[in-house]
Image 1 (cartoon, rainbow, N blue to C red):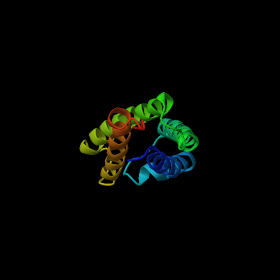
Image 2 (image 1 turned 30 degrees about the vertical axis):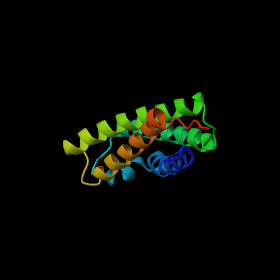
Image 3 (image 1 turned 90 degrees about the vertical axis):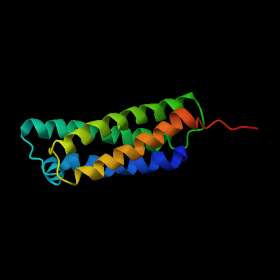
Length: 128
């Protein structure tokens, strides 16, 4: 797994979900069977802002050479996606989200494992 391809893929996912949640949060969460009140709309838009910031970070870091900074980005993304995985898994199991919630669980798990691999197993250092 390469950092560049994972970063680009995550950036695209963040753009798609972040843009949708930012501009039409009630519709976006409605797809998952969740109704938002005024506070939920604000919280959703705050989450969208974080996703769009993540998109920018990953897009502009996609060509980063193996370094401590690139490893820190991968570790941060592993942490973010692992926590997201746990939250969405619990919400889906509790019935907060409809069956479409499982797709988000899988997406978070994919990126948690991918960035975890880059953080802990494949540091990207070139060997002679």
